Amino acid sequence: MLDICLLGTGGMMPLPYRWLTSLMARIQGQSILIDCGEGTQIAMKEKGWSPKPIDIICFTHYHADHISGLPGMLLTMGNAERTKPLLLVGPKGLTRVVAALRVIAPELPFEIECREIEETEQRFEFNDFRIEAFRVNHNVICYGYNIVVDRIGKFQVDKAMQLGIDRRYWNLLQKGENVELEGKIYTPDMVLGEARKGLKVTYCTDTRPTESIVRNAAGADLFICEGMYGEPEKKEKAKEYKHMMFCEAAELAKRADVEKMWLTHYSPSLTRPEEFMKDVKKIFPRSEAGKDGKSVELMFEEE
Image (cartoon, rainbow, N blue to C red; front, side, top):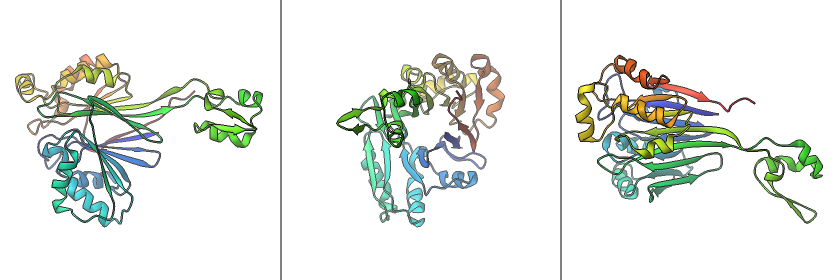
């Protein structure tokens, strides 16, 4: 299971009814935050989710509306008596940016590890999931992210019994571990069927449409994409400042053949994004206007 929540959906500045864009994901007891603008803590409290269990914070880029909430978030984690190390992931310059922001949050009871993205596309592997970063097209270095939960093949009891593997070792093989018995090594692929469909969420903001988005979002269960402007007359402005129109996001969703798309990162001037969804749905019917606190539980397909 993968829990996803859009904590905020605003771009540039927080508004009384809209916090800055931030995403939180929960997987197997672990939590990931993507972007941390001003007000992210309040958005999190309004949702009823806690910052204490956050294991990883990823940053798309270093504009203030995506990172200015970090010092306060770190202090809140520290005040909650957190001692577990925190991993931060982001474009080159992350270590320098975090050090500068920590001038106002210098003493913390936990360690911070910074991993800078060095490639155009880069994977970060963890026990139960992986994070895939891919470069997009903004006026500063900016990345989109995939959160991917793979699902191994179904355990084949008949194969395990044919091989004479004692039942007490089945769980280890299911977890992907090798088992050595009487000088012979048994590997998971010997008792597992073909890999099953996992879960994938793609998140990107502050960008023009790119082929990298189509390629990396392909087949996503949920595609969360910037929709800075819905008004057709704002297209030239979107091009100038390298942001995205609602309909452009819908075209990407269609080409990537995603299951569902949520729009986010609205311009402060866009007060009612729902008014522009009719044209968006003509391009990609499974589109929805994101809103603060919008969440979903993604489940593995039943067999």
